[in-house]
Image (cartoon, rainbow, N blue to C red; front, side, top):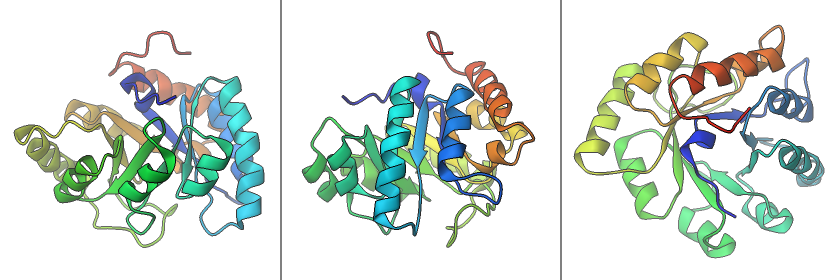
Length: 222
């Protein structure tokens, strides 16, 4: 069943494979640290490897009562009944994905400008990932970097035009950026390297959850 509550949306973790951690290990550490919204992103991995990892991560998300989102793969989302899917600009169109998945699945959309957000809302997305905030090494073919002022301008346009789809900041976010992003009206942030590059990723996630929860209502979540 669809769960797009802002208290869950406020901090998303996107899996990444590093020299130190596998996709599965990155998910395990984030969930152990209290993450309630996880996106399994395994770009360019064979589908059987993605399916095998997704099934394990899905069970972990159920154990930790976390929302489980698959990156890109709509068919696999439907097959294993994940909570939803996140679609990039070059992935399946939102309308086509909604026709396959139905109304009870979460669909997120990657956006870089106001017009992208408007289109995503019109096409029925449940939230957008807006970015990149700054340069990040965890994603190739980056769109133009927005920075804080870019976010501020886009959010102002959304408010002026009554665009109310939840907006999640993504791309190279550091811990010192969190307060500034929430203060200008972002609904949530998405992180990957910020957690995995820490000396203790699980403890880093605990600290990030605490910081985010100081800006949003996180009652009932640990």
